[in-house]
Structures are given as structure tokens and as C-alpha cells.
Length: 325
Ligand SMILES: Nc1ncnc2c1ncn2[C@@H]1O[C@H](COP(=O)(O)OP(=O)(O)OP(=O)(O)O)[C@@H](O)[C@H]1O
Ligand code: SF4
Ligand SMILES: [Mg+2]
Image (cartoon, rainbow, N blue to C red; front, top):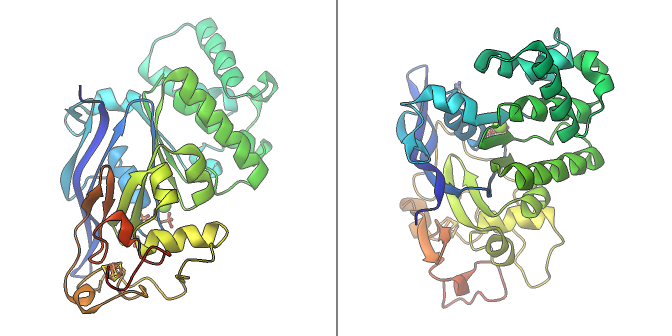
């Protein structure tokens, strides 16, 4: 049986600025199974929010399709408005500052359903309880809440219509670590209790490792590596993934240190060959001339690198030998 719940097929997005083309997404494809969490990680400007906005139907792709339970989301937009919700980086910006919490969380329900006033108030109480907020905040405005409370209100508003899929675009980046940990645990509980499926976008690999079932690594609008979370963190094969992991976790002695201290090239003038070639310590002649495609190196582990042929050729680890390169 095909377990695919959300499927993105060959997404491309270009912007046109002063007669120049900015190819922001380059053939992005991935699937998410029901009840699972897929994460996308990458540096700033790599295209993460562009993917999120396309799936949330806030932005049209230049080409490519997105399917929700095998239906194209661009064809039946009304169904998806209820079933696909998005939580943004900064809840302060995503919540209307002139509305009280009660009205903020009930607004989607008022648009999509017809309930009596009593039923609405009951729904509000239930949903506040689900996100561990006290009823006492119902009459407050967003500026009267802490950052963590604001993000919980944003989550309450997102789940009040019983969506099936939630896109979380850097939901923790405006919060401190302890508050962020509380939000992550809430998201995990909600997923278990409500059967939610998540697309989680972040540059924080520690959180990604904790919450995800599978991870895609994006660089300049292209996936460079895609794998089950356990596999990606135990055997990262792409030098860029290795660099990201090294910068977030304790560095292992038997690895080649890969520094990300040089600039990401401009999307207006991308490298002709491998997009990572200007920063890669392993780059060879072929890397500067030909762009490697994302290939399945072993089951469910995809890598876009000319020099990685099998998991034994993990560049930068002790397993690497000069003959394997
Ligand atoms: N409307 C637009 N017009 C022109 N360029 C855009 C537009 N929206 C995004 N971009 C460009 O597309 C690229 C990807 O942007 P995006 O916001 O998807 O990155 P991101 O990975 O989410 O970054 P961050 O981690 O900073 O949120 C960036 O170079 C950005 O400047
Ligand atoms: S293709 Fe070449 S430049 Fe690109 S990541 Fe692999 S080794 Fe580095
Ligand atoms: Mg973003």
C-alpha cells in the first residue's frame, strides 16, 4: 500500500529581478507518510520558506506539483485550506495585535464552520487546554503574552479546525532554549494524540534530530542529501551535511573538519558544477564542471555528490580512502 500522505514533485521556483532570473528552488521532491515528521535543514536563504509557502498555497511554484492524499493541492484549494495549516517563525507577527486571544483562536472556526456562541466558547476552552494554556489568557492581546504563550496561541489557532498536516517554519527561532523545548514536546504530544503529520523547517540540527523521522538537507534551492534521521546523523555522506552536523554537535576526532566560513554564492550567479564546490574541501575538476544529481546511494539515502558512490565513501570520515575518491 502506498503510505505517501504529502508528496512534492519536482518543485521549481524562479523570481525575476531586473531582467535576471533567480532560481530559488531547483527540482525539489519529497514524500511524507501520515503521522510522520519530515524536516528540511539548510542555511539562511536556501529556500526552506519558499517550499513551505508553496505547500501552504501561499505561493505558486514555477513548475512542479504538490499532492495531499493523492489530490493536487492546486486544484482543490478549499479542502486544503482546512487541512493544511502553517505555524510561522515569529508568532508576534503572525497574530493580529488588535485581536484578543479568544478571537484569534476562534477566527478560523468562524470562517469555516457555523457554531453557536456556547459551542465556540467550549471549543476555545478545549483547545487552550490542549496547548497547555490557562483560560485566564483568553481576554489578553498578543503583546500581553510571553513568546512561548504566543507560539502556543498560534498552535491552538492552527489545530482548531482539526487539520491533518502542519507546516512549522522555524517555530522555535524566536524563543529561548527552555521555552522552545516546551513547544517541541507539545508538538510531539499533539502529533501522537491527533495523528498529525508535520513538515518541520529549521536550521537547528539538534531539534531536527530530536523531532524528525526523515531529513532533507537543502543548499541554494537543491537537496544535497535526504535520509531517515537516524541514518543522516550516523552516516552523513555529503560534505555539506557533515559540515552542518560538525557545527552543531561535538566534533569527532577521526573526521576532516569542514568549515562553512566562506560565503554562499549568489543565486544570480550560481556555480556551474556542484553548487557546494566553492566551499567544499574535497572538490575535484569534475565538481566545477558538472552538477551532480541526487542519487539513491543505498535504500532511502539520497546524495548529490560526484565522489560519494556508496556509504563507505563518506567523505571526511575515517572510512574515506584516497582510492575511494
Ligand atoms: N518574493 C521574492 N522575490 C525575490 N526573491 C525572493 C523572494 N522570496 C524569497 N526570495 C529569495 O529566495 C531565496 C530563498 O528564500 P527563503 O525565504 O525561501 O529562504 P530560507 O531558507 O527560508 O531562509 P531563512 O533561513 O533566512 O528563513 C533567498 O535568496 C531569497 O532572497
Ligand atoms: S560533488 Fe565535489 S564539490 Fe560537490 S560536494 Fe561532492 S566532492 Fe564536494
Ligand atoms: Mg525562512
